[in-house]
Image (cartoon, rainbow, N blue to C red; front, side, top):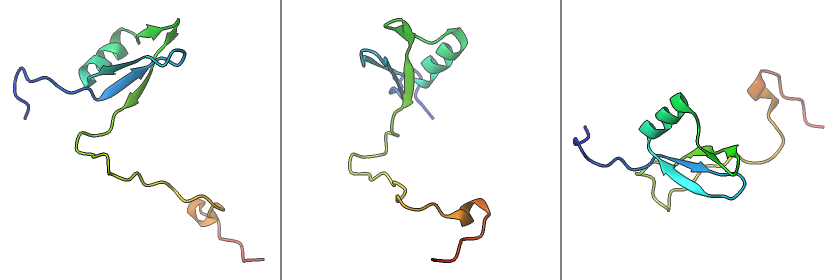
Length: 83
């Protein structure tokens, strides 16, 4: 449970696609933007990104899918025999 009056760290980042300016935002601020309209910069709406969870350290590896031939069995088709 959070302490009343405790400052909430930003969880989202707004970014201008033209000038790369960024602004941190909390969840509550993002909900307010959703209700009242998105911030603009350089004449366009700013994009938003979720920041990593506070528990994730700099040494936390991000799992990336291996590149290669797609597996047809993942979409319900039987795999073709090797040629």
